[in-house]
Structures are given as C-alpha cells and as structure tokens.
Amino acid sequence: MSKNQINPTRLKTSLKMCLSKLQYTQEKQTAMAKQQRRNISHLLSQGKESLAKIKVENIIRDDIYIELMEYLELYVELLLARLGMIINNTATNIPTTTSSNLSDESKNDKQFNNATVCDPSLLEPIQSIIYSAPHTDLKELVTLRDILVSRYGVEFTREAMENGKGYISEKIIRRCGYDPPSEELVDLYLCEIAKTYGVPYSGLRLRLEDEVEEVVENEGEQGDHNNDDANNNNNNGGGGVGEKNKENPIAEKVDEMKKKVANNGGIKEKDEKPQDDFDALRARFAALKGTPK
Image (cartoon, rainbow, N blue to C red; front, side):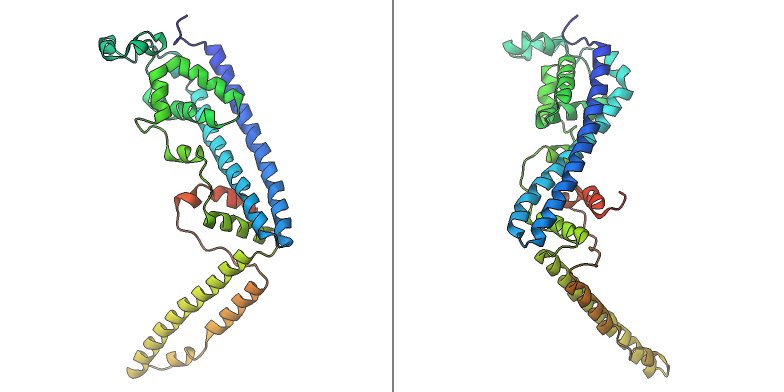
C-alpha cells in the first residue's frame, strides 16, 4: 500500500474517536468556565478588580478554545458524512510533467508525487483540521491530521499551514491565535459576570451611567421635536397637542435609570455593533446570561 492510500476502517474509527473527544472536551471546558466565573464573581464582591481582570483573560481564552472545538466538530461530522469522497478519490494531484520544476527533495518525496486530489467541497474542512490540530491538545485530532497528511501529501499540507489559497476561514485562524484580549472585551466580560451574580463592578456602573446620559440626550431631542410640532399645530389653530407636551416623561425615566445605576444592575446591555472581537463570543454571553443561544 503506497503512502497516499488510506485504510477506510482506520479513517472512520479515527473520525468517530475525534468526534467523541471534541464533544467531551466542550462539555468539560464549559463546566470549568462556569466555576471560573463564580470564582471571579467572588473576587469582584471583595473589590479585587485588578486580579479579576487578569483571571478573566483565562475565561476568554477558554471560550475561544471551546468555539474552535465547535467548528472542528462540524468539520469532522462533515468528513464522516462524506467518507466515501475521501476514500474513493485516487486521482493524481500533481501532474508528472511538472516534476522537473520541483526541487530534488520534493522529487524524492513519494508522498508529494503520489498525493491525491481533494474534492473541492472538502478543502475547507480538511485544510482547517490540518491547520488547527497543532493548536489543540487532542491527540485524537492529531492522529486524524496525520492520516489526512498521508492521504493528500506534503505540498497540500504546506498549503494548508500557510493558507495559501484562502480555504481556511478567518474565524478558524483567529481562534488559533494567541493575541491577548482587548481591554474592552475584558470589561464586557466582567460586566456580564457582575450582572449575572449580582456583585458590584466599577465598569458596570460606568456603562449604566453612560446609558442614562444617552437616554437623556435621546429623549431631549425627541422632546424638542415634539415641542416644535406642537408649536406648529398651535400656530395653525390646532388644539390639545400642546397640553400633552406639558408632561415631562424624561425626568421620570432618568429617575428610574438612576435607581438602577444605584443598584448596580437591572439594565439590559445595549446591542453592540457586530465587530470581530465581540462576534466571536456572542454565544458565550448568551450562556452566561442563562438564555438560549
């Protein structure tokens, strides 16, 4: 059996074991994250915000890792469903006529010369697994990667690691990185933890106060607009509209908002504009709030 030929039973077993391990890892990491959130809530209740900011970075990294596991689980499921496309495709990937342009090292690499074509519909999942496996601690995923590398060859693997043709999603690449989370993202996590567990956090108070100011500005602009309409109606002989505008609902709303600020909670976070930093973790916030995704 040549290097690029594949053992169907071994591949199927590897895919199933990898799938099971990914699911188990997600459940384990999610349970650990809940406990870590409780620990951080205790730190916030004790006023140790600096330490909480450091520790919450571990939660953010764990959440990103869980999301990577979720993507890889989908890819493995897809490969399992399309197992026959991997096993039965035996076409040559590299034409022998181009071998004269290769280095001597590549010419002598049978795995390279005998590599098989990857079906276009499987390029993203296969290259993503090859790229992502070294960034995980799952030996089952590394074993699956080795099988795929043996199947598709060295050049295909090099292309995957460099993402030369852009088959790997930017979401996968970001989740495999090690960039520290932004200060805004850390603050957003701590705000969610503070609201969920009912503990004080200075960053949450500032966010709530900003919302009060925003409501005042918006209501003030709306009130000015309504007053202009009323004046126009009065000038045109209309009646009754001006009387309604004598009521001032702004003060009542501000008082209500201030009470909520004083209680350090109770106001729903305003919708954030979808950004790269926040889009990656929306599901985590949903879980943190106890609401379905």
